Image (cartoon, rainbow, N blue to C red; front, side, top):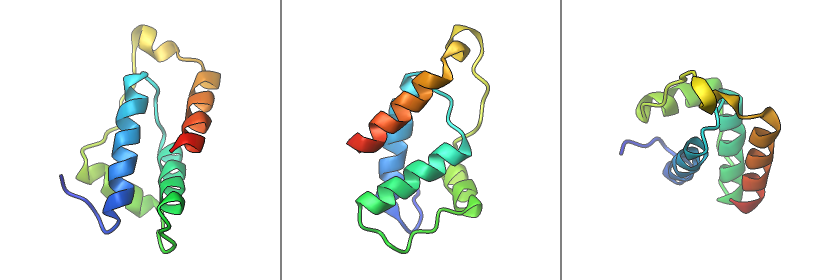
Amino acid sequence: MRTGKNEDIEVALLRWIQEVRSENIVLTGNVLQEKAKHFAEALGVNDFVCSNGWLSRFKERHNIVSERICGEESSVHQGVVDSFFFRNMACS
C-alpha cells in the first residue's frame, strides 16, 4: 500500500472508509478531510495540512473514486450518515 508523508493518518482513514462504505454510506471530500483532521489530532500530528491537494493525492494513491450508489443502497437518510459520522468521530 502506498502512503503519503502521514502514514498513520492514512491507514486510520482507510480503515474508517472501509467501515463506512460497508454501511453503504456515501462519503464526500469534505467528510474525508474532516475525518483526516480528526485522526491527525488524535495521533498528535500538529503539522498536518488537509488541503484539497492532499485529498486528491490520497484518493489517487488509494484508488478512491466518487461513485453514485443506485437502488436501495442510495436511500440512506442523511440523518443516518450524520449520526454514523459523529458517532465514529467520538470513538476513533
